[in-house]
Amino acid sequence: MTGSIVMESGPAGQTRAHGGGKYYRRFGPIERVMHAFLMLTFIGCALTGVPLLFADHEWAATLVTLLGGFKGAALIHRICATIMIIVFVGHVLRVFTRAFLAKDWLAYFWGPYSLVPNLKDVQDIIAMFKWFFGKGQRPEFDRYTYWEKFDYWAVFWGMFIIGGSGLILWFPVFFSEFLPGWIFNVATIVHGEEALLAVGFIFTVHFFNGHLRPEKFPMDLVIFTGRLPEHELKDERQVEYARLVSDGRLAAIEASAPTSGERTSAYLLGSVGLVLGIITILLIVYSALT
Ligand code: HEM
Picture 1 (cartoon, rainbow, N blue to C red):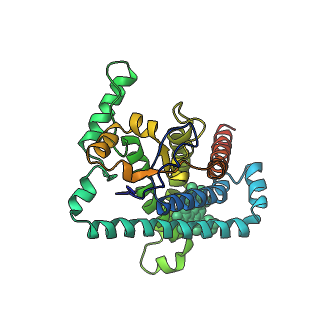
Picture 2 (picture 1 turned 90 degrees about the horizontal axis):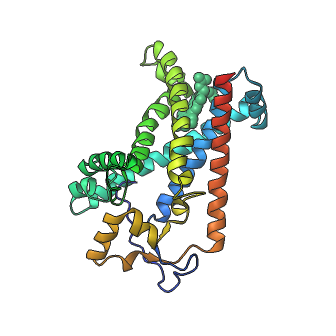
Picture 3 (picture 1 turned 60 degrees about the vertical axis):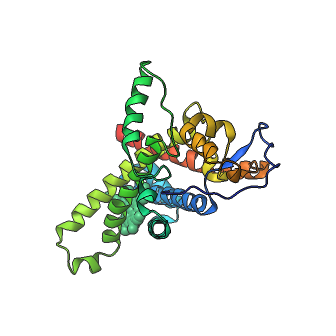
């Protein structure tokens, strides 16, 4: 989330539990809780919405029955949607409040701790593609890589489309007071198609980036524990690491290593998301093929 560096320091000396290395704080409790809610509510909306798109398939009927029938599924969809919108609005308010309180709001949006794309991201994309083909060095990244920014903005704009169309479907009487009738047909199509796009993107590309690529397999726990090991900060976010060292701020973000309990909870939460997401994708692909 934009400008989300967290300078909470952890108790030094407790940093050698897993793999013997130091740990540094990357995300604070608010970001972690918001991500958990976003993740769970997105899965809730996907599981209760996608069966409507494939209503002629047996699995869709079974899934809806498991979720309490059409009434139960519709209720879960609305509860998840409401929490998701609250989290999104809360995030946007938080970003603008922090920008307003920042000494230099321009630096807040354009600085290295922002998720706003900049020229370095374009250079990194070009360098990364050269590296894919063995034509250059892998680029050195800052706080957020270009694909993390892409993931963030995909969800950000998706919220307006999926949330806006969802609210129109939810409150047709209210919206019909000032919107033409054809909007409801458009909202139905847009909501379903955007849902498929979002589900397709999150449950493949986002999962791959976060969990399934070789460096992260089986799971990157940082968004759940808030902490990452020193070698990851050094090797994957070289520009941020160098800045933290040169500014003398590295020690301030040193944190305790996640305990076994924290790691187990993180694996559990991540696995629930991963398994449900992959099952949803497999069902969509199966339905599209049959
Ligand atoms: C964020 C706010 C959202 C709101 C307010 C919302 C609301 C709605 C409503 C009112 C419906 C009509 C079906 C019913 O009565 O149960 C619906 C359908 C649906 N929703 Fe959502 N939803 C939201 C988010 C999502 C998300 C995140 C997904 C997928 C990940 C999703 C996927 C679907 C699908 C696939 C349908 C069926 C569309 C169709 O029948 O063509 N929704 N939604």
